[in-house]
View (cartoon, one colour):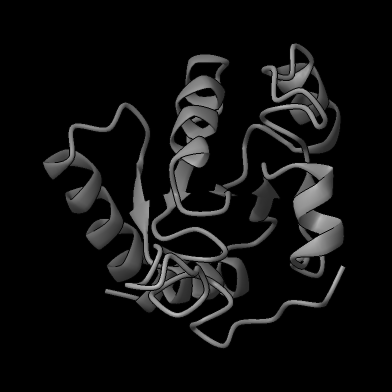
Length: 150
């Protein structure tokens, strides 16, 4: 069994255990490996424009707000923007700040016909630490994966 298959099987088992309606849940490092190993795979960052600008960006990510900034209302064009930018035949991994909005995005994309949707657990910044700060416990950035300051 190849490395990609091994990672995706692990993600599927996690997703099943969590009763997710999409293909599975990946750790940040696993998501990065999937992006390297799966032809055409896309990372879709669903954070807000403010988060991209002020917290940081993942190079090469497709950026589509799940909630709009300012205001925080749901982006009514999310699926239309996804369909315009991402082939529904490729694996799609969704990223947000802490791994919650990306669950909604992966679920909605699956309902819209995307067959290989994955959520990135921990998100870009991870959970809050004892001082209520993000970036120290889990997340894409904490894992040392590629990112740039917005």
